[in-house]
Length: 365
Image (cartoon, rainbow, N blue to C red; front, side, top):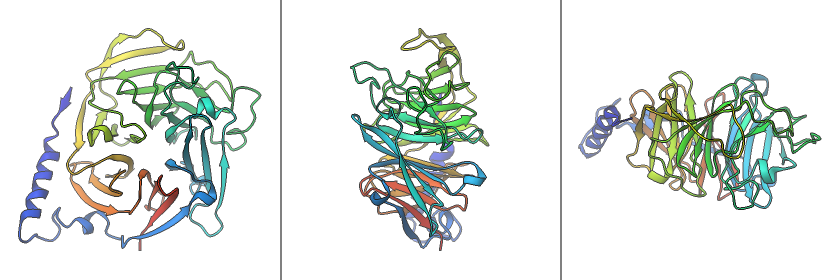
């Protein structure tokens, strides 16, 4: 079921009314720059570019472990013929930073046309979502998210098996985004069926193996989402409130869904592989979080009670208050194709620009 999000609408009306007023009082929502980016002049620092292996970047994320907090992972889109690859920047943004480019030995199947990556805060594993329709490239729909190790002695190293992936499930062709929930459980934007899908890989099968029988998959179909080809739909789970925030560039909106809502409506027949569970869900609680003055919302990042949304076409990063839906402000990055965005441990915003093959930090001055 859906809700019209009256708080968001009320705040938006107040904001529009303020723009039409001849004068505004300090401290109210109209003081956009002061409220949302109080320390931003801004300054921009290009941290990585094509010389570091950044080519058509889609997403970026910092490693979640404290002893690797300055380790930045960037995923490049690649092509269907080659698969995607990853650039890992050690000591990102520091004078002595080092970048290395890695590609799994079977990225052609397990990491193809990657739209997004998401780390597990719990175990350091990470998942990727592929936009390819068939990872076997034979006209079918054998595609879905993959699970990887962030152990550098495992990822993109020979395993004696089928690449270095830890797991892969094949229920979501044209996956446009992925977000971590807990352990090895992730949420995926299924662009083939335009559904939100929860994937629990459960126990991974180890590098290069192929046992998927313990996985549990739940499909949620009531949200009005639409894939926009070649534009990621990044997502993030607010683990303090259990809201899943979803960029929906196909409808120029941001939705959110209560991940604890919904009940099983039916078991679904297995397709492509046997699983422990494949279920259709119903009754999930969702709402439109933001849809005014958005062009192509694609990137998303959460910092406490502030949600940042990156607009792929305008190059703006828009800040929202999660509790009320109030738009707090906009930052023009000048990016040619703004996709993934991230907040580092110091609170700096980072973003990838696919058109210019760069990764940029927004500096607080």
